[in-house]
Image (cartoon, rainbow, N blue to C red; front, side):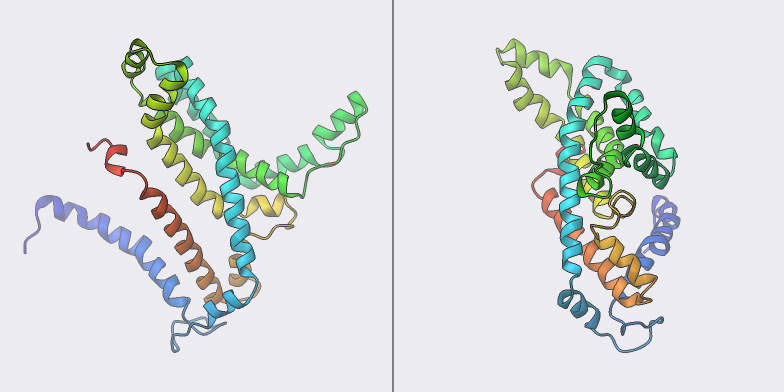
Length: 280
């Protein structure tokens, strides 16, 4: 069977995806069935690594990662939707350009930004030191606690939620809103029946993008949490480094990918992607 000109042009892209994405992913999956503490693909496949996960305490790390990711997504939704709505309604076509300003911190290393929060939140630091010297307030620092971790995650992943939401809200035609008002709809009815449903593509994309990134977060727990909370990515890092148990790390990675993949697919089943993408 002869390939068309378009098919031939796609061959380099397909090869790149196979070598750069599919091959490493399959290697991790296959390595998860290797005997523990082995460093080659030789040996008979075994389920011992997965048994170790379910017999140990790694499930606690899974639960921590899931709960932190869900909490971060929920808080970001509450923060970003009003901001995105205000940007679109006030600045119109300039909203996307202004939203790009929120991505400027991404040009600075995440660890540097998080250590900046350490200086801000630490006892006698920027925040508490200022309150003490100016107002005489003696407050306890939230550094190295669960609220500090959530604060760091909301700060780090805010651009990834805000940008898709702004795009989704900007997709709502002003003519549709005006028509709803002309038909006698109240402000709340216009928002609930017109603006929110039509902006859902950006909202859902923001949810999924932020969740996938947040469930793999590790720096926030290390820097701002003082490792009081151990996410699953920390267990994966330990398995691949200090423990030198690569098959166990691979098995943890596979389970994390499965959990994220299943949750994302369940979420997408509730929405019509063709409508989201404007195909119909």
